Length: 194
Image (tube, rainbow, N blue to C red; front, side, top):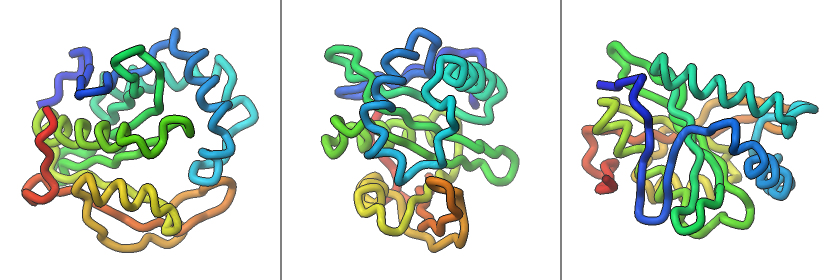
């Protein structure tokens, strides 16, 4: 059962995953700014104040509230060896009752992509969601042409489920996405990450 007042911190071999705090602003803004060309094609359109301190503060308060009420688990990825911010992963839209499900979304800075960090993070969050939050299903979606993200999800045990037309607005326009899911009862979708 999820304990909302408990501090969330997930340690993996190379990463520390924890919720964002206000003092992360400079590292976050620098990473997002330096990776903008890499990230923008795959994300919702950035607002004019996307990289502003006020916008970041709102994100931190949303993260705290979401963790407290059990609706989401937004986490930043830090490299353990030097505490460098690498990206973020969010378990969002947590649904209880008969669904026991959530949606995984993630991003990583361009300089840290394709080094296995996000795979490590997804596997850790999947394990946490199944074992600690007692969820039964995790969902993820990406653009059909995002071969890197599709391959990543498949390596993490997510299975292709289909296509959703006009699923999300990405970079200013409605885009079709491919849908993936990891099911707790599916042994192929389980991870050994602790």
